[in-house]
Amino acid sequence: MTLYKEKSFLHLQKRNSYLQSRENLPCSNNSGASFRGSSDQEPWVTSFASQSDRGNMQDFEYDMLVIGSGPAGHHAAIQAAKLGKKVAVAERKAVVGGACINLGTIPSKTLREAVLYLSGYREHDLYGDSYTVKQNITKEDLLFRAQHVIGHEIDVARHQLQRNRVELINAEASFVDPHTVRLDLIDEQGSRDVTAEHIVIAVGAAATKDPHIPFDGHRVITSDEILTLDQLPRSLAVVGAGVVGCEYASIFATLGIRVTLIDMRPRLLPFVDGEIVDTLSYHMRNNGVTLWLNEKVQGIEPYDNDHGGGVTLHLESGKKIVSEKALYSIGRTGATERLNLAAAGLSADDRGRLKVNEHYQTDAPHIYAAGDVIGFPSLASISMEQGRLAACHAFGVEAASVQELFPYGIYTIPEISMVGRTEEALTEQGVPYEVGKAQYKETARGQIIGDVTGLLKLVFHIETRALLGVHIIGEGASDLVHIGQAVLAFGGKVDYFVNTVFNYPTLAECYKNAAFDGINRLRM
Image (cartoon, rainbow, N blue to C red; front, side, top):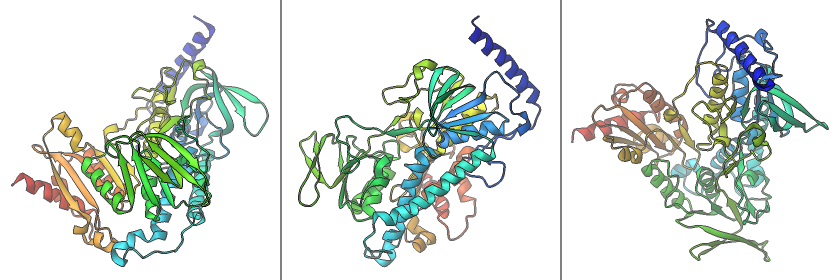
């Protein structure tokens, strides 16, 4: 047995002995995914060890080293700290929070909210399309709100790490061997090598860049550069109709910007219920978005003229699209290129993503990966839970979430959310089902808030009446979906909604209306 293996074996014996000594202590298993908590106990962590338990094992410098401080890394680090472990987070950026807080989720959702408010979009059904809170909305108007929220979320994330005694190291990380990571310090000259019993790779992802596309950060940009636009364009071509592409296309269209959305697939968002996607496509077209589906972009050519220039997009079909700017959004690539994965016995795929098992372990069992770096669905809420579960598994704490019950929130305009199975999936699986639908306009609340186009759809088993899926498009969809998620989690039937009293007037009444609609279909 080599010295390295012998050391690891002895440490494993110590670890097992330690865990056995703790097994009779109380342990809670909360699975929530909130990103903040004002009390000393974050609501989403499992905790059974006190701060005095830290440092009991000295074979490695850290019990857990987390690379990256985004949603997955943040939750993994704090979960491990709550278990009494000595934890460090290596973050190469000057701020914590990863792309979620600084470039992606928080900025885009805040921009969306600013656009909805300033454009008066929510009130158009009541006061007409000409109603607006502010004429001539500028980039500065939108960034004012975004920068405030980003700054606040950075502070919250940093404070939570500090409060839980997680050491934050501003450094670029790369593997030296499976348990050793070299940290090239950002603020100081030099580097240091640290060892850890467990390592979580949560480096996130960056917007994918085709080497044949002339990205310049001005005319041809990715979603990571939205906040750096010098001004709002008069027209925008969006290449890629995934979640990010659809979100930004609908946001810019709501500002009155001429938007063209291009995708090589025959429909938007193929993992979303077909009827919901058809509804989204209708509303996007109604809002001025031109959809070019089954079309592939062959190249993008910038040009100059007396009006400042723009770009010409050449499609494989021979079509040409002229626009002031192009947003290239064909997915994201895992930020693993600088990790020296080979030294840890790991390798990434051609999109920089790592393969993991159901416990988020990589091919090296003590090295975990979570968040965008492992690919689909690349949603912040799910990344948070992946990080938490990885930390629990690393230290032998039983914790589990049902992936089939993870909700999806897509912040297009209108908003989409879903949980459970789609009609397409059930048809493919040969499951007999029925649907029940409710329109927002059928509720008083829908009329009050001015959303008369929203739709809530229940999918349930035609024989047992067990709820199988919930699909929503409309205002507050990502909040409303959690009612259905809870019923799904407990194996409830569609009858639950019939026999439940919902506050009036609320959009939640749509659940009752949809349940009645579905049950009545069975009696026809």
